[in-house]
Structures are given as structure tokens and as C-alpha cells.
Length: 344
Image (cartoon, rainbow, N blue to C red):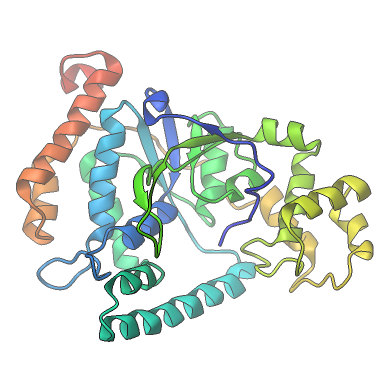
């Protein structure tokens, strides 16, 4: 779900090329879900190998990462760990939504409504444990660093940026801001021409940068007050939020009363599944780790080919071309003529 701060947050459109030379801590699960939802056959079926294993996530990870690195962008993928207990309600809500979408998808297929079936199929995307492990294996072979978060990936990515170990967080959600990410970039893994669901209309999706300091300054609030606004609107830890309360009204209330605690007595039907102070604590003091190593290495070309082509039935020609893009990206980034000089 993610917190809905879209109407409050000032965004600066950029080109991917503008991120050349920058390191980006990418919310891995967020990206993999996008790949699983978007990379599908016309009837909504995900890409699979000859044994029936889904490979859409690997396809997206390989080709999108190679495009980023070719531009001189240095990706760091951050994987979710154990979710906070308060996220259980949101996880159950998502599972129910996927089950409902699956029923509608199968019905649309039976009725021959292919476009409608594809739309519902995207909503059924589910990340299995083996997909995360396959993704980490591929990143290792590509020489791309990844970090295992103890809990929320977005919290860990924000922590990495705050420490100065990456220049940006990358996610579609605005939760990174609540976790204190200084700089968030959206649409990194899905930029390009995209078809609107249910319509024969295409739009250009471009990356956009959101700076936390600018958000706070233009809204006239503190970071803690931004968290208060998020809790009023609804987060992954209280999905419903306050019924009928949008981000602009939430901003007005927090600015008028100063804090969530002071505003609650003035909000009708303000109910929370748990004490909102517990939710705030997750954002203010998330579980993160300093135990990680960020290092870009030379891709193992034959290892990538053996894995994706030998085990997952990818096209060898396309895979080799994608890995070659990574070679070119590293060379371009350092201005060197060989990878040996880059890593030497």
C-alpha cells in the first residue's frame, strides 16, 4: 500500500541520465513486485521457464539493472527482513486482495476478456521466497551489491542514504520519507512508456526526485509531524488511517494542533488498531543494521549465462548483451578502458 503523501510532496522530474555517477539504494521487494506485475504475456501469464518456474522477476532485474549500470548508475538492492508485527493486518489485506484479483482474472480469461484479464493478473503478483533467493544469486553473479535488512527494506535503504553510503533511496512508495530518507527517487525501475490499465492510452513515466528537507520546508512541518500526517492518512501499520481524512486535511490538523496526540481529541471517530505511538516508534527508530558491505565487482559472465540460460531458459544472446552493458557502464563511470583498471 504505502503511505499516500502524493498531494503534499513536491517532486522534481529528471532523466535517468541525470543520476549517472550516483549510487541508489533500491527497495528490492518494491522493484521485484513491479517486475512481476508488469512483465507478463498479453493474457496476463507471467514469464516462466520450461519447468514452470516464474522468471519475470529475474528478467526485470537483469535488463533493468543493466540499463541503469550502462548509464553509470550504481544500484544497491535492499531486501526486506522480518516485518514488524504491526504490519500483519496490511499483509493479510494484501493477500485477500490478491485472492480476489485471481478470481476475477480467471473469470476474465474464461470470458475471453484478455485486456481485462491482464489488468487483474497484475494485481495477483506475489513474491515467493525462492524469487528473493534467485534475485540475490543473480545480483551476486552480476557483481551488484545487495543488503539484507533486519526488517523493513525501505527503512534500511533510508539508513544507508543517511549514513552517506548511497546518494538516493529508490522506491515507488513515500514511506522512505517517513523513515527519514534525505533523498528519494521514484520511477527508477519502471520509467519509460507505460499503458494505462483498462485504457488504450500510453503515458511516459519519468523518474522524479523528492527531497525530505524541501518537503518539510514547503509544508512548514518537522519530520516527526510528517510521520504524524502519515499515521492519520494510513500506513502499512494502520492501513485504514482515519476514514475520510486525506493528506491535505491531515496536514492542516497537524499544523493547527502541533502533533498527532494533540490533534486526536479534535478528530471524530479517530480509531487505531494499536496505540499510534507504537506506529510512530517504528518510523522514528526502525530496525536497521550497519553490518553491510557495498562493493561492485566484475560480473561473472559465464556464471550468469549458466544460471539464466542453463537453468531458467533465457536467451543466451540477450543475456550476454545485457551483461555487456554492465561492463560498458563500469568502464564509462570510471573513465577506464578495462574492468581490470576499474577494480584494480
